[in-house]
Length: 94
Image 1 (cartoon, one colour):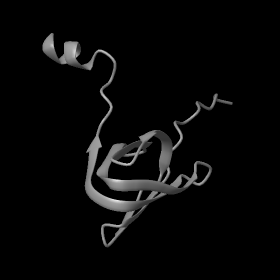
Image 2 (cartoon, rainbow, N blue to C red):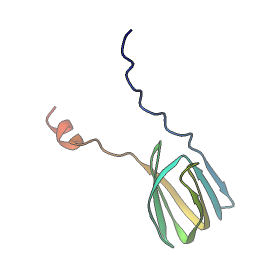
Image 3 (cartoon, rainbow, N blue to C red):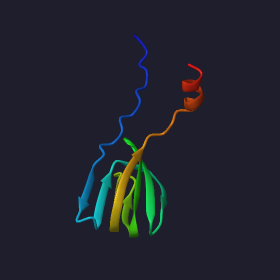
């Protein structure tokens, strides 16, 4: 019988629900990197999500379900992808 190789777990579904730029629900959150009144950042299955705004407040966080809720004035939502180790040098030396 052939050995089964473990599969990489599939990232949780990731969605954003923004209501009137004042309430944001994010699903698929794996880890919160930081949160203060002006900005927040969290790791998702689709990259790192950065929020900026004013009077931001994390109203709820449930890492078991991967859901975070924010209130305040949301000005920007931006994703950045994590760079693989050696990524810059690897591209430079190709």
